[in-house]
Length: 112
Length: 111
Image (cartoon, rainbow over all chains, first blue to last red):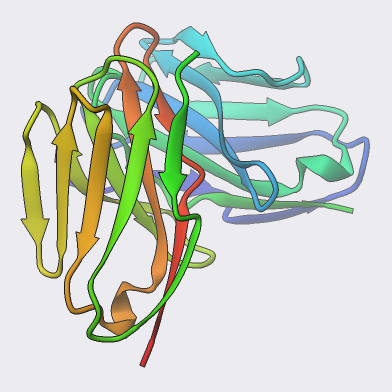
């Protein structure tokens, strides 16, 4: 099976812009979780989607949003980018949202 | 609130030595995961521990779970440089589809 894929892998944006990141889960996995990883805050949970429904959301401002499509692919969007949004954004998939998660390679976002 | 604490957060050791990383969590859970992350890379699943007393081994790494003590350990035997990485433990919150993560242990193994 192919692994979790994320696009783009690297992104440079300017403050105030918005960005959309994409994640394709492992075939058959219906749950997709998103994480933000920074040196200062570590690994922080953003949200989890299952069958196009957001089931859980972390403690992030409303500028961070996501969605999941019927084929389980997911996107996350960050609007009005701030310098502090610079991070590695990781997507993980699992069969049902419980249990072991499989991570994609991540998208490195730099906001200047 | 579920908290997951790892210690130490940083560990520098010599090749050939043994050491243990500890992962404590604050509420009942019987599923715990260990992941490895190399610098600039994503997370790789190492072990899945699904019950009290579970023990898994892969090469020089061995993980165990004591749900009564709310403690998991990752033991490194005769460390080699290739094991240098950051190791994370994560605990399964059954009720809200979210893994709770430790802060990670950065392991540096010197030749």
